[in-house]
Structure formats: C-alpha cells, structure tokens
Amino acid sequence: MLDKSTGWLGQRLVGTLLLPALAFWAGVGSLVATHLGWPQVSAWWSALGGARQALASGGALTGLLVFVLLAKAVLPTLVRGYEGFWLLRGPAVRLGQLGVSRQLKRWRRLRLTDPREFSRRYRCFPPEPQDLLPTRLGNALRAAEFYASDSRRYGIDAVFFWPRLYPLLPDALRGALGAARASLEQFLVISSLSAAFVPVTAVLAAVLDLPVAVWLPVLACTTLLSPLAYRAAVSAALSYSELVRSAFDIHRRALLAAMGLALPETLEAERTLWQALGQQLYRRDTDRPDLIRFTTEAPA
Image (cartoon, rainbow, N blue to C red; front, side, top):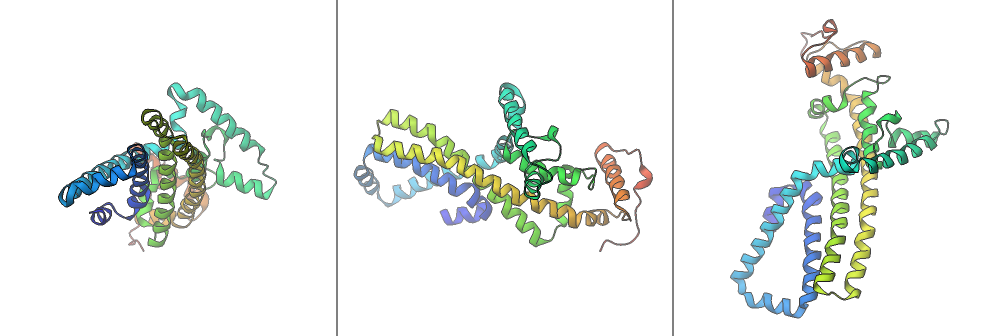
C-alpha cells in the first residue's frame, strides 16, 4: 500500500512531505506507546489478527496521505511565511519591522570593496535596502527575484515572466531547479514540523505523565532541529537562486524568440523591450507599442 501511494504522490512529494510527516506522526505514536507500555501495545497489535491489522494499517496510511495532501496545499503559504511576508502586516508587523532592521544592519555591514562581502550581499540580499524582508530566507529568494528585474541589468519583471520562461528551459536546468526547490521545501517542512513537535511533546508529557528521561531529550532534539533545518533551507535557497539567475542570463532571449519577437541588438534596446512587453501583457497596453516588432522567421 505504501509503495503504491509513493508512486501516486511522486518522488518529489515523497521526500518533501511524506517522509517528514511519517517521522512526525511516528514520533507522536512513540510517545503514546511509551505511556501505554510497548509490551501492551505489541500484545494489542498481535491480538487484532490479520484482517483488522490490514484495516488499521490502511486507515493510518489514509490519514497520513490526507495530511500530506493538506500540507501540499499550504506549502506555498509555508514558504512565504518563512520568507517573512506574514510579518509585514497584521498584529505581527512590529516583529517584522524588527526583523527588517536586523537584516538592514547585516546588509550595511557588508562592504562592497571587499570581494567576499560583496559576494555575500549579491547572493543573500536584494540590491536596495527598501526591498529587504525580515528573514534570511526571504532576502535570499528576493535577491534572485530582483536580479533580472534590476533596471541596470535587464529590467525584466522576473515574477511575471518566470512561468513563461520556465517551460523553455533545457531539461537539465529544469531538473536542477526542481531538485534545489524540493530541497528548500523539504528543509522548511522539517523545520516547521520540528517546531510543531515541541508543544506537542510538552502537552503529551503533561497529559500522559511521561518520564523526564523520555520527553526531555525529545524536546531538546526537536528544539535544536528546527533552526538547523531552517539554516539548511537558506543554503538550499542560495543554490536555487543562483540557478534562477542563470536561467535569465542564458535563456531570456529564447523567450522573446518563442513569442515571435525580433531580437534587440543592444542591451539598452532589450531593456526597453522588456518594459514595453511587460506593460502590454500585464496592463493590455504600452506607451511604446513601436518596440514590439514581430518577425516572420520560425523560432529556432
């Protein structure tokens, strides 16, 4: 049953969601079994018999898959939460301001004259301080977003054009992007489930009166695992962001060709074309329609 389910979910969801969810619920079950007594649990399982064991296993697997599907639906929200967008509005806005102030201090400490510090600012932060987010993860991803959007580079609306560019990328690059994104999401899921396991352990320890020798190491390990997984997610985000930059550097003009547009001959002409094209597609009009010139040649 588990083998069929993993094939249905796909390899990416298995690593990103299924395995962390399985570890989470196995941990909860282990704490409950510790309270009840492992010999008693083993005896109860043996007494069920084959048919009822199969039904119980099927029910547990169904519940796990429902949890995974629900987690899949909220995964984009989880990523945006770790980026810090939820800290920019609502009751947590003060906390968000403190986070942005902390990131601004880190941004200002990096000297552009030092090659290593310039590399860190390039990879870890957007170019302008007003675009900073409250978290390291958010700034690492935003740095890639503003890379192509920078008017001194290409002037492309990266968020708008990325879904149009992505299908044109070579299989090798799309595979690398998918693997880097899956790694990023997997570490965030591990971080969030580890953080959630801390209050779960505390509640179970109080309700079930678990021994200190059981709940204290679990509480310490999960408390430590959550920030470690987050740091790993930031590292994965840096790798993913560099691949996004490479995609725009190498293949952005392939998107123009695929849309049947005449390729500009200079960088300045390309910048103005991207601006006009973005206006036309997003706002249904542009102040420079003369820049959008089609060619009769078939795309390469």
